[in-house]
Image (cartoon, rainbow, N blue to C red):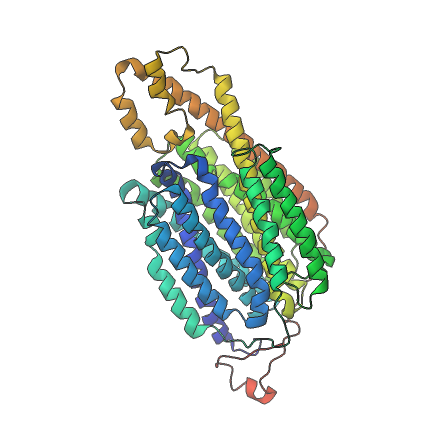
Length: 538
C-alpha cells in the first residue's frame, strides 16, 4: 500500500482508530463496573473467569486471524470482528446470571481479538517501521482516551443507572466503525498460491485452551496436584508436540516456527508475555482495592484510576515520536519496564487514595513508554508477507501472559484471603448458632464491593449483631488489603524478570521503507490510482 497518497492513508487510519476505540471503550468501561456487576450477579467465585474467557477467546482468534489476514487481506476480518463484538456486547447486557455473562464475554473476546490483530497489522501495511512509531503513539492515544472516559462512565452507570447499559451505551459507535471500514479500507486479493493450515490451527487451539483452563482452575476450583489439572497440562503438552510437528511439515504454517529463530521476535514475545502477566494479573484487582479496601464508590473509583490512563497515553505519544525521530527503541523499553516496576512496588505499600493515584501515574507512565516498543521491534524484524502472523504472535504471547497472570494472581489472592482471615482471630464459632448463621453469609470480600448493600445489611441487623458485624467487616478489609499487596508484589517480581530479559534484546535500527511489497497494478497506473482502493497480492 506504499503507493497510496498520504491523504488516503490518513482516512484509512481514522477508520482503524474508530474501530479500535469502539473495542477499547467497551473494555475500559467494564473494568471499574465489573466488581459491582459481579456482586449483583452473585458471582464472586467466578470473577476471574469474566476476564479470563475474554482473553482466552481473543487469544485464539488473534493468532488464527493473523495468518489468514496475510492471505485474504485485513478488511473482511476487521468487519467480521466488529460484528461479532457488537453481538457479544449486546448479549452481555442481557445476562441474567454469571454463567451467561461469562459466555457472552467470550463472544466479545473473539471480536476484540480479530479487531486488534487486523488493526495493528494494517498500520504495518501502510507505514514503514520508522513511521509506525509516531502512529503507535497516536493509536495509543485512542486507548488513553477510552481509558479516561471508560472508568468514570462505567462507575457512574452502575451507581446511577441499570448496569446493563455498561455494555449497550456505545453500540451505535460499532455501526459507525463498521461502515467506515467498509467504505474506506482497501480491498486485498487472496494469495492464490497459499494453503490454509487447518490442522495446525486446530492443534494450536487445543494447546491454548487446556493450558488456560488449567491455570484458571488450579488453586481455586481444583488443587494444583488434582487429576483434572494434571490432565489439562498433559493434554496441553501432547497437543503442543503435535502442533510443533505439523508446523514443520505444512507448506504455509499458521505460526511459522522460523520466526522464532529471530532473536528480536523471541525476546520481544517473552517480554510481552511477562509484562502482560504482571500488568493484567495485578491491575485487574486495582478496583478491588479502591472499592473494597478504601470504600470508594464505583463512580469515584473511575476517577482514581483515570490519572494512570492520562500518564500512559502521554508517555506513549512521546515514545512513538521519539522512536520515529531517532530510529531506536531499546533504551525506551528498559526505561519503561523499570518505571512500571517502581509503580507496581508502590502499589504494595499504598494505604490511601493519593498513594494509589501516585502508584498508578508512575505505572501508567512506564506502560506508555514500553507498550509500543516491542510491537514495532517485531514488525521491523520481518518482511511484509509475514507481517500479520508476526504481529499476531505478539498479541498471542501478550494475551497468554495476561490470562495466566490473572489466573495465578487470582490463586494468590484467594489463598491469601483465607489464610489472613484464619489468622485474624475473628470467628463466629463462639456466637449463638442462629447469630453465627446470619453472619456466615457475609464472610466474603464480595460484600465490600457494594457499599450501599453493605449499609442496608448493617441497618437491618439487630443491635446485638452490630458490633460483631463491624468487627467482621474490618477483618475482611484487612485481609483483602494484605492479600492485594501480595498480588501486587507478585506482579512486581514478574516485571523484574521482564526487565532483566529486555537487556538481551538486540536493537535493529528502524527501517524507513515497507519491505517486499509487490503491487499487481501496472507501475504507470500507480500514481493516477493513488486514491482508488488498491488490489494487493503476493
